[in-house]
Length: 94
Image (cartoon, rainbow, N blue to C red; front, top):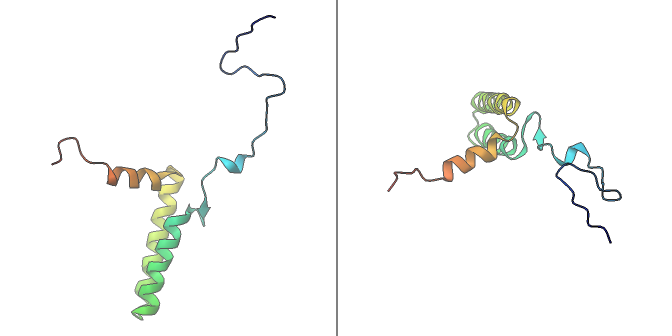
């Protein structure tokens, strides 16, 4: 019996599985992160329909979605990073 050592990056015969690219890509809705787009649309619909401020709701949706799309172009996973940043306490915080 011969012992073989395998280094990182080496292919082992029979242990390779192709992974589809969509498994690693973020879920985007209209170019914005899915959760953020849904919250933004719901908030804009509440303002537009509930408060009957159509122009304000449309403006809120357009600005919010545009900002989310620009941030997602820069970093597609900015939403989870932002949430983690908000939850994390500062070093010198009480």
